[in-house]
Amino acid sequence: MSDTIISNLVADLKAATVGIDDPAAAIERATPIIEKMATDLSWVKPAYYQCDDDQGFGITILNEEPDHALLVEAICWLPGRGVAPHDHQTWGIVVGIDGVEVNVDWKRKDDGSKPGFADLERDRETDVTRGVVCSFMPDDIHGVRNDGDVPSLSLHVYGITPSTLDRSEFDPVNKTQKPCPQRKRVLADA
Ligand SMILES: [Fe+2]
Image 1 (cartoon, protein in one colour):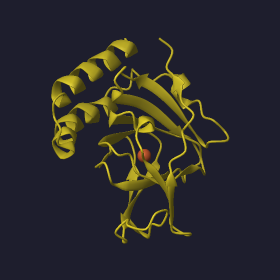
Image 2: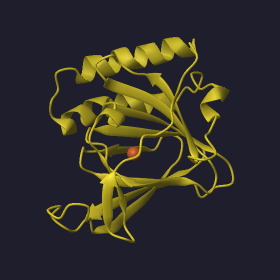
Image 3: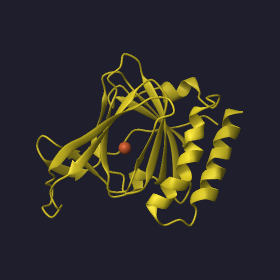
Image 4: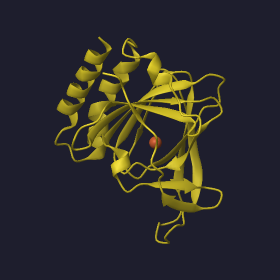
């Protein structure tokens, strides 16, 4: 049943976004489809809560295409952990499923012309609880924290698998930009 829900999600997302080159249009079309996934949680499996202690979070791949289009992942964040600001270089949408993950949006103040340098300013924070949606344009920069006492879970969809793209991670204190590290990810059991 849960696998059918994910298959239907992927089919609906493909129908809505294939051939759409404008990221804003893809986000607009995909958002209501992804939002619905927070209504009926019968697709959520306990395995999606497995986290990597070193990394601070766990990524379970629910759909990845041979051509890297339309990646769907469940991401679980450990209490007190998070991830540094980064971009995706593709459109992305997140919907909260369980717990609270704090999404932190950052604004870039420099023009990006100095290699390795980035001057970021914290923009806004959103408590991503069940049903709350955040979306990202390719150059948007965000980080995530779990300030709670329990793991949080969210569903993520990206136009293209981010790990195949030339994307960046940022250090707002030291004002650096470097290649984004590859994340540890596991494939969902069939
Ligand atoms: Fe992200």
